[in-house]
Image 1 (cartoon, helix red, strand yellow):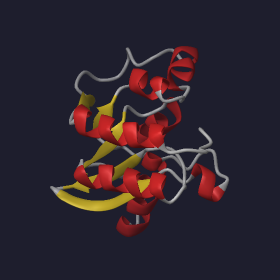
Image 2 (tube, helix red, strand yellow):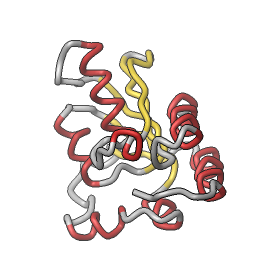
Image 3 (spheres, one colour):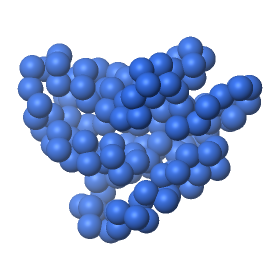
Image 4 (cartoon, one colour):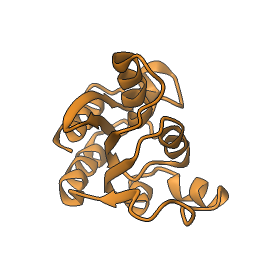
Length: 150
């Protein structure tokens, strides 16, 4: 989670996008990390999880990330959750909740409700971890002046 947090901090300090970083891990080794590049790339799909997944797939030379886990700053939005499932990632550890994201101006709850929520996910697939550490990054993000939220 520390590397996901570091990625989020880099992204917000460089003005790349929201406070979201992620790390793909396999067999206890970090394969790839990524952060939100929505603003930097003018790409509404380049969330931290997507960035990390794309990099991990390139490094491993496969679209199938079976056996991998994902550590991410916040509970994945529906788009990222779908990408995680398509990539066959087996477990997700997240810091902040969808409600925390809402508090800093992101619309995850709206899309989650629209798409039916998460009731059908395998029990234990999503696990909260290190929320307080991740909330500190959200606080830093909230304090940055002249930001655009995506």
